[in-house]
Length: 273
Image (cartoon, rainbow, N blue to C red; front, side, top):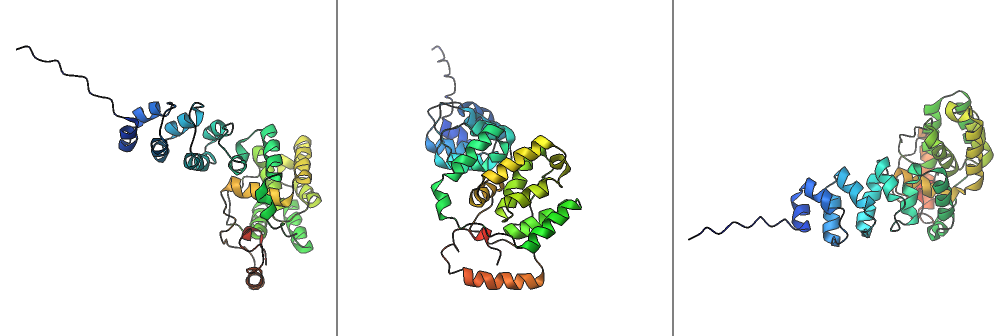
């Protein structure tokens, strides 16, 4: 009897391809509009840059909140992915704030306006003002061109671990303004810093004018929220404060009394003791 021709192998389902980690097929599947939530999240979990870009660029696909959360986390460190994610309607205002540094000037202004009106801002404590000594020391460090000293002082005032600030990058000048505001440095003192350091900012009149508009038009609370989101900081996470041993004792005493206050669990990042 005649041999029955073999049937071609059945292509794996999206679920099977995602579960098996078949990157080539998974990148193709990422462009489909009919993915289940489970398959979508499996694809995101593969942590493949090509798959992530395809999912972010697939405008026919509705991303789940879990997928958005993971893609935004990756996009903070991947400019191409951030560019695809920023226009997506599934993003919340905090998601867009997390991608602030990858946005153009107009989108940044919209993000600042959105954050200023975000309900979450009503539950945040105002950032404390840096005292005269702290402001003077920070401006003096900027005048001497001691970038690392400026950065360490900012981290101490904000209460965050050391960051890769790269303030000399013109695309990150906004980050310096946000950090100064979050540290409780008023607009005029923040502008004094910008007129001194970094050189890429201080030596550019248009850049200084843009910087001045940002620090004068952004509240400390909004600046702190954008800073936390764009750097991936957690407001409720206890972080080291870079101060002298004597100052650390004062900080601990201040924290003990602040721990029972209404803002203790909302915005610890802002506490300086």
